[in-house]
Length: 345
Ligand SMILES: C[S@@+](CC[C@H](N)C(=O)[O-])C[C@H]1O[C@@H](n2cnc3c(N)ncnc32)[C@H](O)[C@@H]1O
Image (cartoon, rainbow, N blue to C red; front, side, top):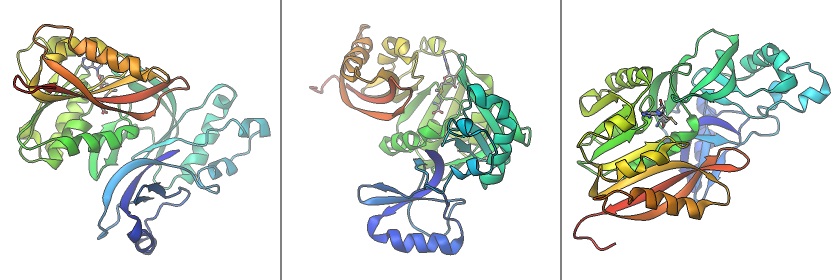
């Protein structure tokens, strides 16, 4: 799968939109349009003009002559060609690819092949995975410009990021837009574990009368968040705090909606978060879940939330798979509702 910007349009307008994208020369080749019920998402190279549709960032499947063809530009022993990954991430002008074992000695050649194949690419880096508490990706530049800084477009919003300094995953783009779509006028939102701020900033770009408090312990993430907020002209409605969540949660403040996106360890903060949500209010919790243990995880999340006095009455309103995380684990999103004093759950 390859992540790309796309335009989501109703199926009955799909053919007309496809022709218009071709006419503008922005339809991205090598990726299959995605069917989603009554909608079709077309991948694009650059944002089309004058076409009505929702701008999204999603994973597209390669066409048979698509991204596999970066492999055609390589001369490797046949047994290694078989091990080449068929997918990679494109974040702005940076291509990040996972390579292992026998492929590593060929990383420069693979990087050059990707650089010449991916139209927007200016840098290719080998992705050695996210590391440490800040979850920043260990990226090794193997071809192109020696920089991990880029402008990255998601849901029609341009973010400035440095992939060597902040966590950034295009696979969360849909979640950022989804949660922004749930927010209602006048809300005060807490984005705990905010990174460079895509949840909070997407919410603020969509809603003029909402305020956000964002918290992260990575000072560079907070710096990027503040810069992006200024550029997007929402800085007067966002308060960015460089703090450990455990310290922040000692503060006496409450929110209409809390977002918690620290999938591996977020669970341990749930007891304290419970009392920071107003009743009525909402919590969006992201967690890693073993594939067959969705039910027991839901129960565990609820029991953590209600484990402290004054945490109120909670119900699980829904859970959904965000994306596979490993062969045995899924990234799941849980939506929980805290009921007000007078509400009967
Ligand atoms: C998975 S990233 C989420 C980023 C962001 N929400 C997004 O959608 O792109 C988790 C973030 O939590 C931060 N973090 C990890 N432990 C933390 C803690 N104890 N307190 C505050 N932030 C923490 C990391 O620095 C990282 O930016």
